[in-house]
Image (tube, rainbow, N blue to C red; front, side, top):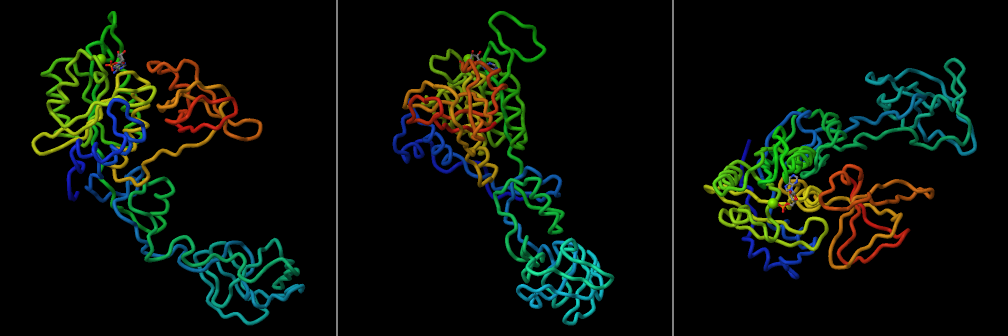
Length: 430
Ligand code: AMP
Ligand code: MG
């Protein structure tokens, strides 16, 4: 593994804040949150070489330059007869005599005279001097005589060019690409068994709150089972992060301090849930403040208003902190809207913004301008084959079942007001 830097961002939080117009920590628009985070985090800059199977889902650390052209030769796109296309005459059939066969993987070496053709299979190298393939099913074949009826082909038809997929010496994949199944196949098509990727991002996460029960603990009045650690686990897993699960941390300064210090020493990013809202009687906020450079926001959004963001530094090693609210839906929404793009940026990905689609609202959605709302929605197709969306019933920020039913988040943007039936709305597919 080679290392050229740590995960620290650029300026201090104050510097970042003062570079943003309209920065108001007490009513921060979602767009400003994204701009802030873009400055807070930078790519981790540590790479490693991995085998092609391990590369799936990882971020490419540099451009992959094609060592070869794919295909390596001009070749046939069809089973048929290869001939010299300049022999085609408008309005006239073409008679050809078969003088050999070119198989895929076994080129035909002979020479071809005018009036002759070579039987050729899909993928076989085009014989020298021939540029056109008459598909078998278009031809009348009698022994070695082939008749191509008039008007069916133009010169050059059914030939694939050398390098038409990938040209030797050109970038086949770009730095910052997340390696997909298709990209794995493409790497293999170039004969590359190894590829240079960013190292996995290490993310430590824990839940806070004295009322939070771990699985296996007996229920007690006023307590709730920890669900946030499991939704965060799932979302981090989908991103391909290396996860450090630190459990539930009770609301005691010594325990919180221990957890934050350990997380800052071992991880690139720390995600906590709970304890960041106004009037919280607990020690979480105080500990974040004590150990790092941290801001506490009220974001102009619903759900998920409170959020803490900053940097914890321990023994010269720094980690980005995302202190998410406690409510289970708010955790998922703030993660998807803000944390995920920031983590992708840290991972070295160049595609960090979620792709929003547009769907017609199937109902009236009440909305005040001046905040971004994320409603849980079910997206489907209507009779006109357009996307349509209906919200899942109860939109309370603790109602996790609404997240389970939803296949998308309806994003009602900051300046938007109420939505009428049939209006287009943005949706972020889950
Ligand atoms: P807080 O932000 O700490 O005020 O928490 C807001 C709400 O979310 C409270 O009802 C908490 O009980 C709940 N909550 C906090 N953390 C979790 C968690 N890890 N799992 C489930 N619910 C939680
Ligand atoms: Mg709490």
